[in-house]
Image 1: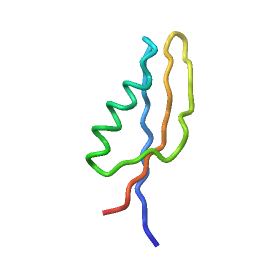
Image 2: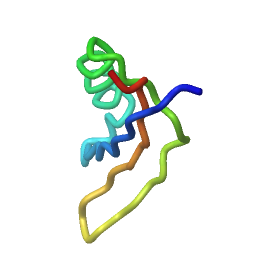
Image 3: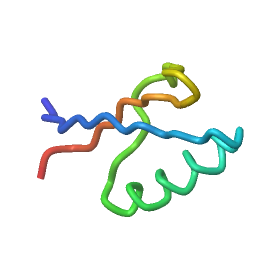
Image 4: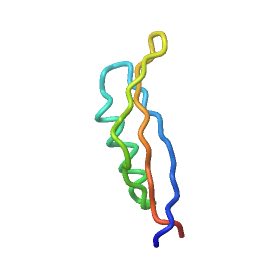
Length: 60
């Protein structure tokens, strides 16, 4: 049975460019073996919009 590591990332993009910012972060983290594990959960706090995504990778 594989063991996994998990991580949450927060993507903020008040200019509406969530997808571009998410792809940029995932390109960086993908090099370390991280992959998206959940659908994005959107939030708004005051004027700040963003999303939280769970990531996973095999434990090394």
